[in-house]
Image 1 (tube, rainbow, N blue to C red):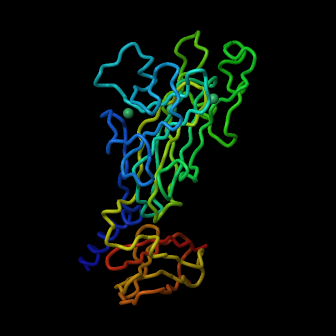
Image 2: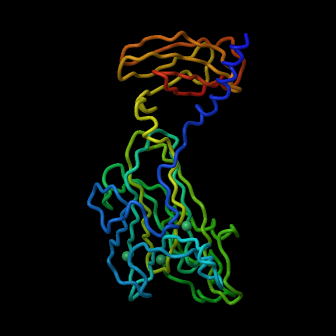
Length: 353
Ligand SMILES: [Ca+2]
Ligand SMILES: [Ca+2]
Ligand SMILES: [Ca+2]
């Protein structure tokens, strides 16, 4: 009996990790070493394996800032009297304030290719416009499932709005319009406005009482990359703002399942594990696909990790597979079906009303 409890205890300990999956850092860039790694190239050739820092517009900056993305310090620190060098928070910045107030700034920061194994992957980043709401910079986060040329980025993950003309009368007058987000126009229509329309006080500040615009503080954002499970993608943050000031970004982080640690197991996408009907009544059909013959086991756990049922291990041939678990006697609740294929576990949740 003791060994049974011991086995059960081990299963209970292991199950949460199985369910959550192994979240690894697939990409991280905090700009603290002031150098992107691997070292970026200056324009994309279509299948690059490094970062790309691409000045597509090639237009001169009005303030002699770099024309592409460049290392800067955070806006909070840029406005501070002094910051110890060791405490500097380096960020990537991009300017849209061009000579002659020209439109057309397009600065692309493109990641190396990233393999998305399953639906657990998420992308996180922080951003802040130099000023707002007047002349507030915006940008786009796009995905390509093909190459890394600008025309390859056909999927939109996030749009952050820029201010667009015309400006209202008294646009720089604090008493009338300057700090009123509703006084200005923005684009694109479906985009997000920094600090949720300047209502989140953690993400902006006034330099002093005479300031005619808020200064941005880095605000965190995240999106799911579940739609790209099983694909290799490029991500880009393209600074596509026209005639504003500049923007900063920091802490780019892509979390997901590490391709290396699961290289020998079929990806979740390849197994095509489904459990139906769901919610269940009398039984659940478990369907999946094997690329090659394998030893499979099927187990049913309740929501606390207690093993309720286990079908004997079976040798299955390649192709489409079906197994069935009786669920008629189960009380209402959440359950986990765990399919083990040659030692690798795949999980689906079952609901019983
Ligand atoms: Ca940083
Ligand atoms: Ca540029
Ligand atoms: Ca603008």
